[in-house]
Image 1 (cartoon, rainbow, N blue to C red):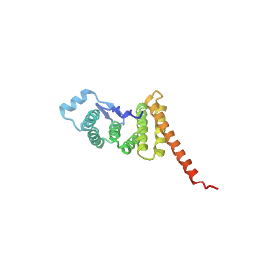
Image 2 (cartoon, one colour):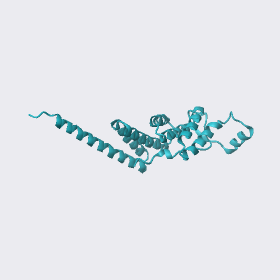
Image 3 (spheres, helix red, strand yellow):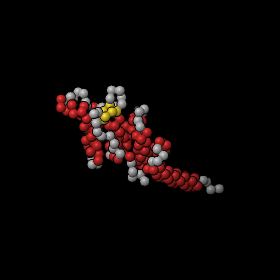
Image 4 (cartoon, one colour):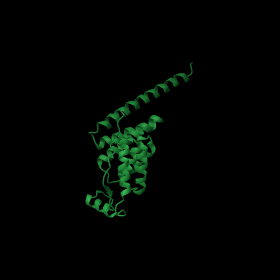
Length: 196
């Protein structure tokens, strides 16, 4: 299947802010209006939220490089914001920057307060990354990791049919690769045996 990916679920947009206590919260519109009227920029970090929201629009329009640039700026302003990091990882994935995308997803998984839904999406996306990396080189290293990530996504959400389909797809390709390799090795062994 492999045409599907959860990076299309580019989720975080709006008035979310990382509070000093470390929790994500939505600001009341009255507070936002107050800040607008009295130009209270120090109280609310407008720019990173604005960059994130603009990046969401760029992403939806398949302008992944522009989305990446906006998200990198937002990430510099607020490096601990998991929403920005997740969106940036998705943008990088769409540009086939798999190693960098993988790194951001792995950083996100270290956070203790991620929802099960987000963990499942990250595991699924990591499965896609490892599959793609295995297509380019050394599937014997990357495809087992892909299968592992899809299985972890399935363990989190047993209803995830996309993860199940991708798991079966990679498993089938992995078995075909092993079969081809085994045939080549046995052919070489037959050729190298001395005739008595």
